[in-house]
Length: 383
Image 1 (tube, rainbow, N blue to C red):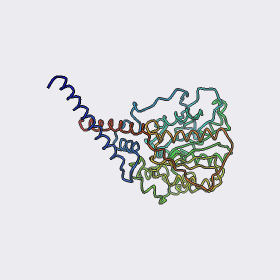
Image 2 (tube, rainbow, N blue to C red):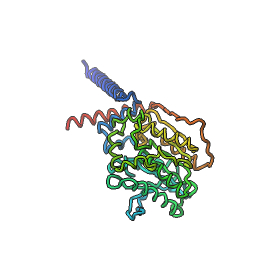
Image 3 (cartoon, one colour):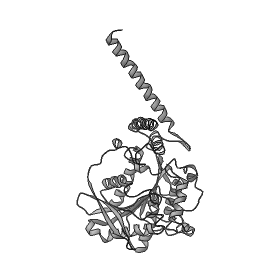
Image 4 (cartoon, helix red, strand yellow):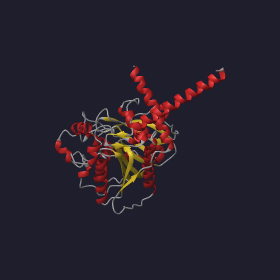
């Protein structure tokens, strides 16, 4: 065999080996789609596997080479807010670099109401993206958490942040006619309580977004709680029970409307609202039930379920096309609410189900991520 033939032969075998390895990766990635509660989209399955196997650095964050940088159109500042009981809490502002006045979105982060599960730092990517896509001022208080601070401290801190926005509106260059609230998971629960408090105090909010919110502390038999509460979909029944015990040690508080807004009879006069739920989420059914109750209370509300997604999926908007689309949907909702005073309650109530499907880019990226994850597994085994 000539030298040239040997080179061609080696290249052929190398190419075949690469093809075989890629096919193995593709087969393994496809197996990750089959979860305990059914089949999920490829990209969703890869991300679920990565987080549950602890193959992503720092919990839910994503490898830096998968992140698309955002143009610097906002500036970030950390402030201190003095609360009603005199204790200071941290608060973060994301302000557009352009001159205002700007709308304001007061955002309450999720994290099971407890220390170690979420804060403004864990939500920095969502907050930055929301600021960029809405050209609004984002105000994110680091409300105090259980177990050191149980209900109603988080509600008081969050409402104090709303009062601060109105008090400092001129300094912020804020448009007081366009102030909204938003929150995800536990933060969605707090957002509902803050709206009820705002109505009592005479504040008029423009709009609100509840992102996969927790809406009742009672043991209501929702099918989604049974189907998706193992923890594989990023929220477990055990965490929900620990959160309930830490945040509301007094069981009588479980039916308090500021704890369980789904049970409230004071849901009239909510601002135009968007309720976002995820298909594979234990909180899906109660979020949609809350949206329906808002509707029957006479409010303008839109309920949207993003199929193929799990609890907390917006945190993955940089690497998950469905999440990026959902975040843009939320931003478009706020932009539309800031630009018009029109309301149009849909008849009858329904939950809009959206499924954008995985694009070719999503699938290619999913397989690329699978290579990275398998390499991480090999490294762990070697160690």
